[in-house]
Image (cartoon, rainbow, N blue to C red):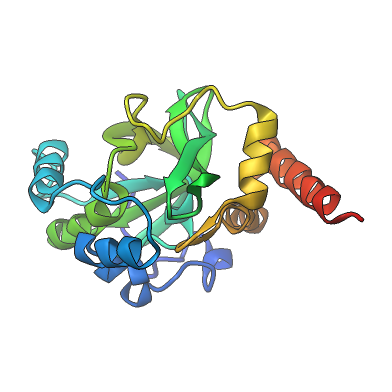
Length: 247
């Protein structure tokens, strides 16, 4: 196992200032009660989220046997810039056998609605995925994963899964949130045109779908990661938006 470091950004100083301070993240204090209030204020359909009991049962099952050691968490989307949990180390990582796919069709208000869906990424089977690996020290696993579950398991979309992440040639077991194809939000049948349209027009209480895509691209640029799918989606979405604005 990789030795711990004193500075969380020791391996990637270029990420300093590009990741939201977990203690300042709005997700850290996010609750279903707060979500229900937002949904009600915006007149959106509610009741789709997990109860606290259901969410805690999911966490207990996923972390069985992993609470007394440091925990690595693989980030491939918004966790890369706003994890909300305290971390002792961040590393660039590659997860073989999976891919970042833009198949999470947001219709619930976060970055899109049923009338104007948004789009985000999910981890799905594929040739490999580049992202970030965050280490939570074992003394903080209980508290920080409670924060993580309130954010990633608010409702059906992901399955918490341990995957093999490769860091500097070493394989590290890491927790990841993988696409749940039984969930309504996961739509692997989206066409390229639909993806671009949703990225260009989706917006909600978390921001726009385009901002989500831009943040992924920004982190890849800082790390020197070339992801043709992300680059092409951003390029095509920006072009599409210009076409919408043309007289």
